Image (cartoon, rainbow, N blue to C red; front, side):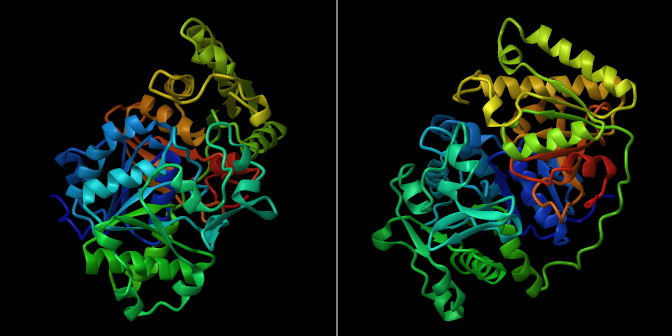
Length: 454
C-alpha cells in the first residue's frame, strides 16, 4: 500500500553533489522528510518517496560552462516546477565561487527567471551554521579560527578553478549576468514587518531583478526565510537562489505555520571496521584530514591524477591504486586514495570545460575505482571528498537516490547518506560526500565511527 502524498514544501537543484546533500541535511535536521535524486525521477520512483516533503535533484552545473547550462538547466527546472513545491531552490555553495566561464550563477539566474517567469528572485548566501556571512552584500567565510572576507580567504581567494577575487556579490554577479541585482541589507531586513514585505519591489518597468538578502546571524536568516516564503505564497514566485541558508531560513517559518512535525532523533548507524575514502579535493582542509587519518592508522594511497585522467595511462593507474587499496582493506585497515594533498600538489589536468575535460574524467574514474573496491571488499560505508569529484564519481556507483542516514550537526554540510540503487552492490551503501572546506581534521574517523563527535 502506497503512502499518500504530502504537501511538498520544497524542491531543489544542487549545482554539485556535496551542495545537494548539504541542503538535504539541513532539511533532515529540521524533521523534513527529504530525498535527493541523481536524475529526474520516474513516476514510480516518486511514488516510492511520496512521503517526502522535499525533493532534490543533484546536478553538476558548478563545474560546467554556460553553454552546458543553456542545454540542461531548462529541463531540470521544468521537472522541478512540475513537482508543485511551494519553493524551488537553485542550491549553490555558500562560498559562491563561480565565474563567467565555469559554474556561472548569473547564467543560472537568467535561465531560472525564464523557466519560472519570475520578476523578483531572492538570493540568500549567508549561513551562520557554516560560518558564512553576507554583510552589506559582501561575503565573509570562516577558516579555522578566523573569519575572512571571501576575496582574502586563504582557500577561496586562490581556488584553482573559480577563485573569488571580489567580495561584493553584486559586483561578482555583474560579471556573469546583465540582470540587475538589488540589495536588502541586514539593517532594513531586521526591521521588516508584514507591511514591509508588501512593499518589496518586484522589478522596475517590467525588468526582472535579483534581490540579494544579507544574512549575518540567525535572526536575519529567519527574516530572509520569511521574505522567501512571502514571495512564494503572496507573489507566486517560488524560485530562490542560494546556499543551504535558504533551508535554515525557511524552517522556522514552516514550523511557526505548523507545516513541520517535531524533528526526531536520527537512529544510530554504529561504527564499521573499515571504510574507503577517495578524494579528488585539492583543498587544504581535506589535506589536513588526509594527513590526520594517515597518522591514525589509515593507509594512504596517492593517485597520479594526470595518469588517471589520461586516455593512455588510466587503466594501469587505476589498477595500481585498486591493488594497493584493496590490500590495505583486506588487512582490516581503512584506506584513502587521493589525487592531491592541498592546492600545492594539484596536477595540471586542465579546467572543467566539458564532459571530456580532465577534471570530469578524473572524477568519473575515481568513482569507478571506488565501485571496484566496494564490490571486492564488501564495504558498507565510503567517503567521496571534493564537490566536483563527488558529482561525477557517484554516478559510477549506479545510485538512483540518496537519503540522510546520519546528520552531522557538529560538522554540518557533509552528512552520511544512504544510497538507493537497482544494483545489489551499492543499494544500501552508506556514503558521505565531503565538500573541500567541510569538516574537522578527524572527519573521516567520525564517519567510520558513525558519530557526530569523536
